[in-house]
Length: 215
Ligand SMILES: [Fe+2]
Image 1: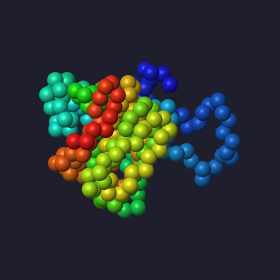
Image 2: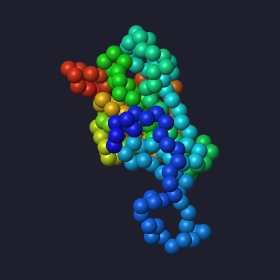
Image 3: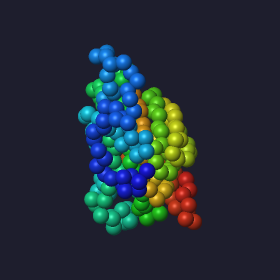
Image 4: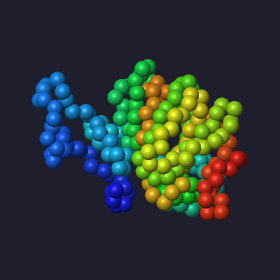
């Protein structure tokens, strides 16, 4: 993977129906169609129709990081993370699934690594799966009794996020951390609980290395 492509904020949205160098072994038929979406396995980019993007910049993350003065010193327009998601059914549909990729930029706010806001699911008994495409990170998990732990994320790492468990991802590397997620379409997001009470631990740079530090 080229480093420049990893940092491309606007990956190509179209993909060929088939690889032109490979003969299609499938018998032509109106009953067999191409998928509407593809994932670029090297970058995590979600390709196809109707991909919805969301960006979180420094200005969107007040109160998320421990060092408010360090956050205020950064360019408010600096991109921290963004998502590319597919919502094939309406939000709240029971029995459906959503999926997408999150890309977290490398960086820190003071000694705290760039990370997502984190959430419980609004429908708390819904689980989720993550799969890392690029970079290195930590998946921070917190149960309802505020017990906090983390799993190491690296290319290919696959993570089951249990029900009733808050989750946040942290980029502890020097390149973009890209990971795919799939979650039930009736899970929803409870950001308010984290905004009010936070996680019970933060990922800080201690002695040049990331550490999960109880708060
Ligand atoms: Fe989630």
